[in-house]
Length: 111
Image (cartoon, one colour):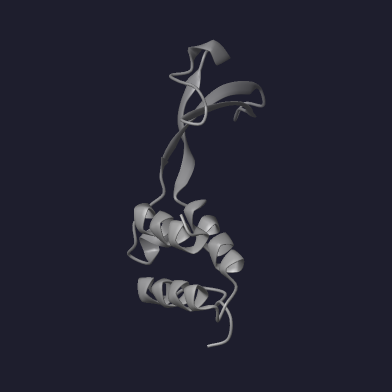
């Protein structure tokens, strides 16, 4: 293997790349960036409900996001989106949890 693969196939691939980065065979900063990108896929905003006004939101960002969107009838509606775990996230698809990815990042940053 040369460098960091474009896609990781298994959790073992990630662990091997972290070990290679720790040993100096691949750049730590690039591996850290890839791990952080993996974490960015862990949560996703899901349409929750239509609101009467922006003030009716159930909570603040980042847990909830309120946006004005175009309704089916051509008008506008205020929609609340809720931040939810993404079952199709990269760590989940590799059989990893977010905490493991965070531990790898801490290891690479020397924390």
